[in-house]
Length: 404
Length: 226
Ligand SMILES: [Cu+2]
Image (cartoon, rainbow over the protein chains, first blue to last red):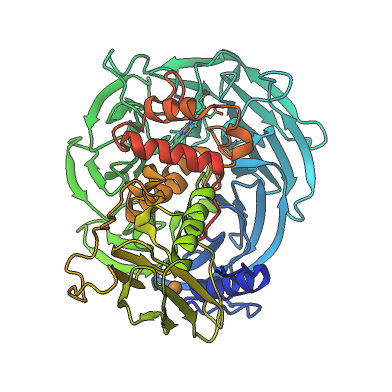
């Protein structure tokens, strides 16, 4: 009896053909033909499974370009150059890609580390910092040509590994701030003299910091802790005072629920003098007074919150959730602290981004391969955009926001 | 085991078929269809599936027998198989799950209705044959397996990386986790690792599914793009 033999070459050819068929959708790739326009209403949507990103227009709800070849984007994030023309994409595979969003082209791509998680752009726009899991540490590059400026390995965990670094942000004074997951530290790196990075280390900030954020004024850096209920805060106006703990024991001794996805502290949901933060292991959004950092309230929500983000005017806070509740989005009224709306965009609701002044929010729905656009007053769905396995959405308004 | 047993099955069938007067039936594969999709043959007969597409490859997969997915075959190639047991044998194409067919095998000479009524039940008269191997996977439907792999990629992937090469959680590629036994992997997935972000997945997988998932990790997951 004969069994068919596998013809490797034919198979891979056929697979190539098939995959190119699958991935050429209706987007017009106008490579090389630049638009003469500003970028203020543009943005980038990451397509996590295909290593590509779409350049979108938030005024017309149209996709302008698809940029391919960005590597493993399973956990990608993006920062913008201060002219808001270039997007820097940080990929899981350690890739750092610079995209020209006016032309829809990949300007430069380097693989700078084994496994990166995020990055930041310096106050003056000249430096790009990348936070790496492997080898743990932060590398700093020139934003122009992506040449290496500084390599800052994190504290050693054992003789083979350095701590993973998380929660990397820029702060005023040409600083980068980040936390060390394995060793429970926060480091401030001053890059005023790019040839001499000056590092201040804060130790024992708490167990397993998993992410960090900076307030929009650039004054306070907050690290979320996985290993204990509470957060650590650094007042960058008074770094000499060191880090202190806030919201200790916010779980009030309640049993911790399993966390199927780590929350993100990107962005800062602030409304009046209240700040809204995701609890870890509790299906709650925490409300903190941003003057004294005391906890004011906790709001029961649909699941483990992932992103807790405020509409730019601070009137509402939008929340999405971890698996298995990741089909839902809830909207909290920041005055009454009540949930005013529960939406179900669909399974794999991964990220939300407001347009610069907040009349619309774009929501990526992975399992439907689409991005949904909602009116933030009426909560009506206004449009849907086909995007392959969308994850992060990043609009150019981030170019001028500290910490984003 | 998984490779050897189906082979054994083929060899056994070979021996059986040589002792019987056998006929070879043809099924063409064209335009993503098996034609005929339903066929009735006698015990001992052989079927030859011929790929008559211009450039598309296919496979003939008796998935419900718990066999691993066979190799693809390309235009002008064929795939042959003999049947030495009576019963209904549904099959599909591996890469194209919507392409399905069924082989109804009857005792030679016996007059039986030519089209079987239920197509999902495999009627194997001698249950002690090699057909009942590979239990774990045969009891998890293809759909569920795809769901689990999707979850692995995207939801486990949120901590371990979509390609499982590591993130906040360590790499789960075979060379990284082969230091653990299957039982240890199963226990880690089932109960999580208290004190670390690794959560317990018990609410989402039954024991068989967890075992299957652990085995997939040990084997290595092909990075199928979707
Ligand atoms: Cu097929």
